[in-house]
Length: 218
Image 1 (cartoon, one colour):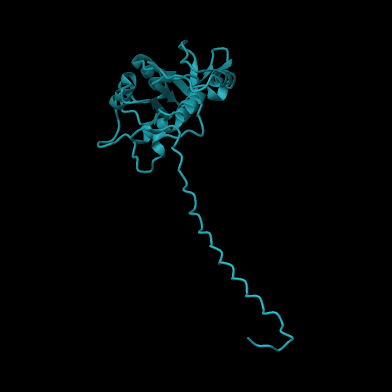
Image 2 (image 1 turned 135 degrees about the vertical axis):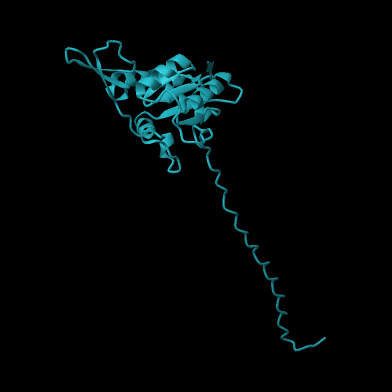
């Protein structure tokens, strides 16, 4: 697991606030648990009791790997990928845990979206999402898994309903990583208009000859 240096100390407070919001709001939980006594609770961990009933809480507003109209997935896989979209957050190619996590998802046959965290803007946005700067980070729906752990990733992918072995169609290609924050488009300033050069002032007229009342000519 690698840790990215925070871009700004104020991000620590924002990450803490985000974490408290996720715990306080059941809409961000991955599981709705109904106990034997009928009591309902929300959790981001799979329940342990065998007699608990589990139903998923569908996230909204999340970009998924199935949003690409050219992607053809089996119906069952498309359904679970829509309910619990998988996003992998990585950094530079030198990040070995990131590479291991990517290989795991591809071998398991998980359709996922990959986002790279390399710039200061990426780091700030990533901290708001994950609450920390650990890479790789995997999100399954609204569940955040920081750091690569094959056993933990298997547990949550199984709980979300992803098949244990790949059912991706032959020739399926995973999309390349894209920046978490799209680069800004540089707008060129309009060309300056040429300044008109003022015409030179006309030379003053020669003074008129003084009157000659004597009528004498030279």
